[in-house]
Length: 218
Image (cartoon, rainbow, N blue to C red; front, side, top):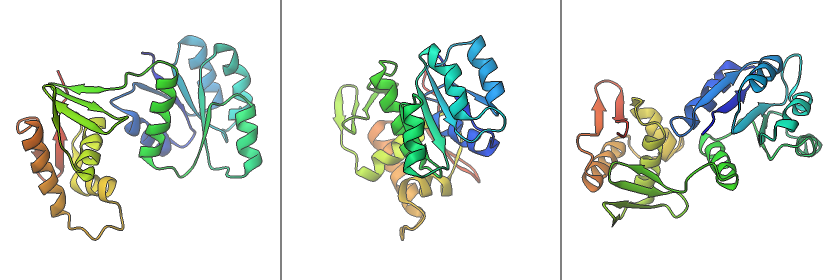
């Protein structure tokens, strides 16, 4: 697979998008239209996530440069008016995501487009565990594993960030939400259940004073 190009002049947002997509996708970042054009000229990308409001060459203008390459584009922008979305789609974008966006929504949109383009497999495999995001089903060694919705959501956050130590409050927020009345101790219970059900006692580890880490698959 070729990398995903993230084009956004706000470094914090570009970094957030990269964190959301890794480790499922390799990412390259550009912070201006000119920098993006140089990268597009020098290498091939499977997808471009493009901010509309860029300094200098804006996203709509950059589409004239991207279109001949045939690379699919998803616009990411703070512009919410219908006419702005229509303009972006007519410029050749496959999709249009409005800031602020939910990380899971962004990943779902990217996964959907990649599957449509034939660039992403339908299942995720880690050791002897197989996850099918389409049906939210999990199996271990070919045997179905029954997970609760929360356990499945937690598993997907860990899988999408495997190899990175995640803070407990970040994990809790991503799975239960900011407005949840549940105690953060609930997270530890769900982690314990995942370890037992998937046989990951040595792979899903606690990180002192931080949270948890799921090791990289071999």
